[in-house]
Length: 472
Ligand code: ATP
Ligand code: MG
Image (cartoon, rainbow, N blue to C red):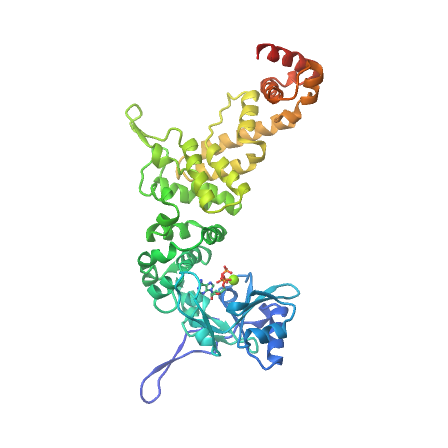
């Protein structure tokens, strides 16, 4: 696949000659090839383009398939009457193949950009090279002819893939000022494709941040989530940090860069967050929580004369207060937001063998039984991300897990629903009217049962409830 270009010397000027590079069409799904064939049957041309070509050339599995064609939108709708007109005004429809959804787009060159995201108008063109020229990065601007597998690569995207380089098509300053999302895509691709950012492309990011500022928060969130699927998402966040992208979206995180920690840590606050996120190989939202878990540290850092070291008292509570508006700003769903904030809030714990069963039950209730698995993953990543002497912390985590499992196996009551009396019992047996007091008594009973599970018997609970009522 990666045979070098040949140097062709005839009389006169020597010139480069592209070797005949082809991709193995056996790796393209049948329904994608069939779709191209159907367009050809109507006298139209079709090419496989974009991310899927890049992924094929770099030996990855392609996720979604894109086809470019010289058929104009009305013709497209005629050839594929059941297609979804996803972005028909820009010439894009989605064809539902047997196994794949394929985006089919009319060849186009973009008009001027004034909103920083979308071209004001699109001009349909007949030349695949003109269509490739509007694409963001050279590695994304390669087309494949589905008839013979030949690649069309006017910007040497294949060469850049071989060199491990992410480079803008054309003048990066111009391309980044057209569409603010591109700088973020650049950061994301550095992580997901494990490429290095071409220096001229990187240098164009800071001067074009005003265009980046116009990108909708939902788009930023989606790119963050995609970056989290990389093996090492810190590659993306390091780019964002050093180019100023992150200062626009999340200045709270930037405060930790270069901020020294205490003697337990090998890294500064920023690097520690990066290492923790990378080590958290679970789902993307958990990785967002890992990214933010110490966001409270910069604002709580204080020097202790006693220990002659830095302290970060309350950084978990303060961090949760900072994480909440960040997650809201990035338009995370209510569920994801609650999860992120809870993980930041409860990420810090130091289990010791002296914890009683009651202490473990109190801890489970505090963090929420549904958050246990997340917290285990986050804590393991967090202690590893100290970068030194974490074996004892990992052992302590293993002991906590075992203790929690034992307490749960014993059927510990963790919510008022697990009590052997309910609100109705309280009303009939104690003769009290519905109201807030019922919930308060149930909470007090749950506290008692958390401390001593033997109290979770109907008669014992009713006796206790009467005492609580008398004292109320
Ligand atoms: P992935 O699907 O892994 O997110 P991709 O490169 O396929 O990556 P898509 O959003 O699916 O990204 O877009 C398909 C192609 O469209 C890209 O490969 C690129 O050629 C072009 N493209 C997408 N977004 C932009 C953009 N903002 N500016 C210029 N070209 C773009
Ligand atoms: Mg894609």
